[in-house]
Length: 347
Ligand code: SAM
Image 1 (cartoon, rainbow, N blue to C red):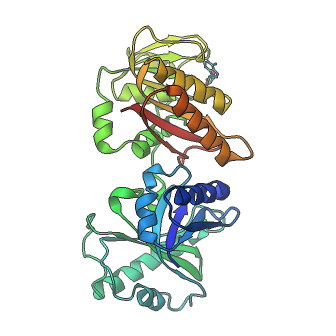
Image 2 (cartoon, rainbow, N blue to C red):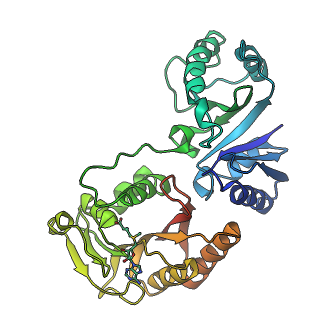
């Protein structure tokens, strides 16, 4: 079996499967997606795994926390010796720069964390003995993933370090700092890590830049921006935490985020207002059409049903109505629940 295996938030397998199928079709690559309810992953079966991996880049996928090229699916593994069939499946071919033994982030697979850890310690030397794994991590070579979905059922897969999530399980381990005004701060931090690359982060987030934060209270996103030394206009009828105001970088406006506009062009606009996604997408488009900001990060809350359709519709509507040529990337982040986060920048 060739194709891709991608991880997602538990419960979003149908959205991930729909996205993979649609994107494979758009790339004119035959493939069909399979996903089980609450499995925390989906598989895209296709003829040419390498072409699918190239065409369906992790960065472009919205519902995939991680995207891996399948090497083999192994069922009925004997708990006494899971290594031999894996070495056989690898067939002596390929050399890997790292090994990650993982499991999907689902209720059923989470208890496999202990097995994944101990199995990694046993497999690593066996791979090295056969020259399949480098002694030290090498980011120029593909990474080998063993994905346990059950004690006797695993996938072997590979990823390209530059085009895959750089975190095991596709989950960045971010720590909520004690002075963060809200857990939401983690969403913006993760968005900056997942949706921008290192070069973009240093070019687009510079001290003295200006930003608006729509729906800012109690101030988590504003606080993240001030930590990058941006000057922020925070729009919300609710109060902001005093220590955020005390940075001296923040102006708080009690106004409606759907009507307020800046007096002059800002570098950034971020928006975490809980509202109908189409209404948010339209307002975000207005900001770009009118040239009120250069870059934006905003959330789109997803409905209960037809979530993939609504995602496509809102992103299409946003791009069309912005009237600009934009780079747009969207992801359901680890810290997102029933929502996705979008990064847009004028080209
Ligand atoms: N990003 C914030 C943080 O990190 O602390 C949390 C934002 S909270 C999820 C949503 C906020 O949007 C609420 O404080 C609410 O008052 C605000 N909001 C909702 N509709 C709004 C509107 N039309 N104008 C301004 N703020 C709005």
